[in-house]
Length: 232
Length: 99
Image 1 (cartoon, rainbow over the protein chains, first blue to last red):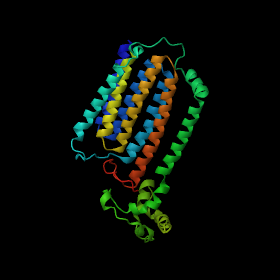
Image 2: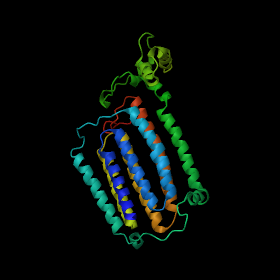
Image 3: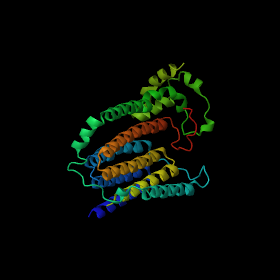
Image 4: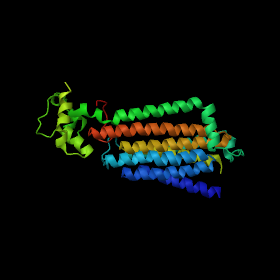
């Protein structure tokens, strides 16, 4: 029975992982990762890690994946070019990964830990339960717990700073280019951004803001002008 | 089931994630492949916790999940910032560090 559950979970996890790297559309890749995470949570249950499995499903497959889905829908489908900047990359990369797998397997199978070839010791009742993990987190690993919370805070602030709208306004020099440019033909165009825009012409930065917010660009011309004038 | 099975599965998942990082070019998919590798590490940690009969490995796996969430948040923020600046969402074209 345990074997059947293990192989079902393992096949699901491997299929999800292959789907992540094989599917062209990033949206489907995210969905494949959800399959992978749920299968992995089943494996955690087999290993008597109930709380980790629950956190995996609720936090990972739930919250984090929703974030991924949002960004995948926001960015849209990104076409990946066929050309290879490194010759033979398509063949060398799977070869390298296979070599990594063989190497790790040799390290695992050739280890002297004889206890790995057993199911492990018999566990006390409540092993991996929320109570036991919570006791450990709040007593023995309290410093780690606080450091993790601080890390989450820093990451949240960093994400707001990175993706916030205020970073876009000074970079108006880049926004006048209508399409993605290669790094070579980016000319230093900061003086252009320093000039105040004509009120009649819809400034590209303002039109881009209008695209973000869904409002007509006419109501935002003054805003873009103010930000353009504030640069020098 | 022997714990070795779980460890070999973890190695396989890690290798698949590494292959994805090497093959794909979209930064979003590369982040997904990083998730694959972190989860493979998590599986190994939980398997070792089972093997030792010790719950510290499970706490370690939880902390790895926290770190992965932070990495996702910052990485997705970077992708959104790149998209807003009309930069190409392709790691091969994002070679230079100037803005």
